Length: 379
Image (tube, rainbow, N blue to C red):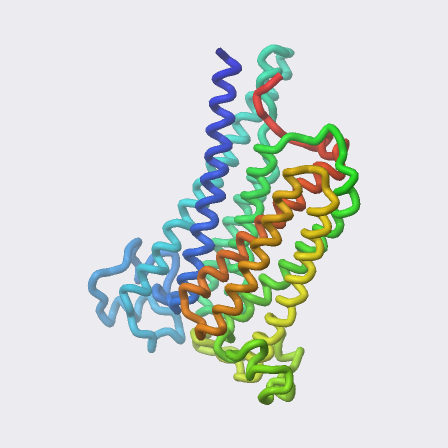
């Protein structure tokens, strides 16, 4: 009976972690939609909206003056944009509370388990195990920092570096939540996979390449650079079409915007924004080739069906993401396709994290088992 009770508690913990993963996806999607629909300054103050926890029904001049940031007084209040921003904040706050609950659950469970171990109650200790603690703690710290970035995003009027950092913070929370869930549902490998032993470094390198591409995408979005390269395959069509080669500068890709009252709709020059977009496209080619090569090699080399399926998922998502990128440009950047492109980037990142995690378990079975923290509740 005691073992069954422990299994129920552990399963509830896993479900809570899974729910936090799903909510993280929703928060990332809502953040992307808020940014793409130009609603980032729908509420010019933080954490509320014009001093209220909801969007005010009526807004007079005195309320606007009291809660608007310097440089945003000329922005017109739009209720629809304000609600988009506040709904994103509501779900982000809920996610933060959920991650805090996961951390507290881990802390209290581990204190109980250690107490049983200190009392030498081996029968009880055999059906209890320590829950992960470092990852939940890191997630809570990251959520607090993400909330700070969210405040700066508003108070600094969408400063591009802050906006990009806020986007990457959302992806980091989603990634670590998924990694936590993988730790809970996976078991350490007792035997190695000779086909996967040489590919852990490959997977980590592919992750690094993908993260650079995601950062470039965030930098492109933060500077509103999408429309400044609207041809296929390059800005004006072919390699020699138009003047993009004369206007492109790698230095412009990393150019910081000048101080401005607010950064909505971007303040960089058209040439700089075109350079950012071109860099994003070039690195997209490198990213797609890298991920496809790594995933295909692992698919053909591994003996594990779990690893093979993970590699196949990466391949399929790379194809989907490249297709969405092409459709996005061809149909002149509609919000629906842009949102799908953002979410597909998140799914591609998670699929690559999953592949890397399984490759690590099979390539390093002894180290994985030694450092594995699971609580299946089984003897």
